[in-house]
Structure formats: C-alpha cells, structure tokens
Image 1 (spheres, rainbow, N blue to C red):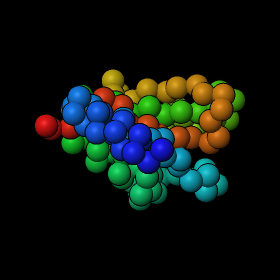
Image 2 (spheres, rainbow, N blue to C red):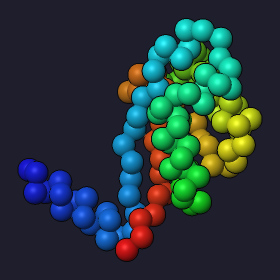
Image 3 (cartoon, one colour):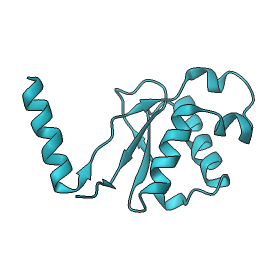
Image 4 (spheres, rainbow, N blue to C red):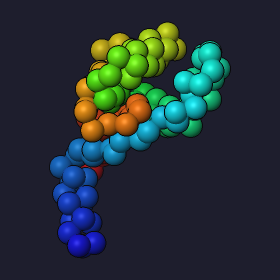
Length: 113
C-alpha cells in the first residue's frame, strides 16, 4: 500500500501538478470577535496564503457544510482574505456536506520538474 501511494505521489510530481490535502481551521477562531491580526496569526492560514502567493496559478477552496452558519463563516473568511490583499478570483467557496467546520484546500499548484 505504501509503495502505491508513493507511486501516485511521484506521478503527480512528474505531471507538474500537486494536490494539497484539506486543512481545517480551528473552531476557536469563531469563538471571539475577529480582527486582521487574529486572522493573520492562524498558522493554517499563514501556510495556505504563503503557498497561494508562491504559485500564481493556484486557487484556495474554502470548504463548508452548507449550513447557514458555515456559509456565513466561509464568506467572512473570504472577505478577510480579500481585505488582506488576496485576489478574490483566487478564492472559492465550496459546499461539501461531509465537511465539518471550515477546511482549506489549495488547488492548481505546479511543481517545477
């Protein structure tokens, strides 16, 4: 099984595309009023934004479960990222009924050969 996964990963690298896994935002982020400093301090967001900026063709998907609360949080997060100078065309909201909380996924990252 491990060899098969390694082979799949090598195929992705050789094709020039890598597909990041989803990472969850901490639920505690929504427990208090948000500020730019609080949003920027989130390690998951720091990593995702750094990768997004390093790969001009990449997009950031914000997965949510489709509930009104999750949709509002996803839209708020998108608004914060846009306010912090991320191009709105690179951020997409995605309803995923199996998702719990908000999950980030980078897509379209190219890897140099």
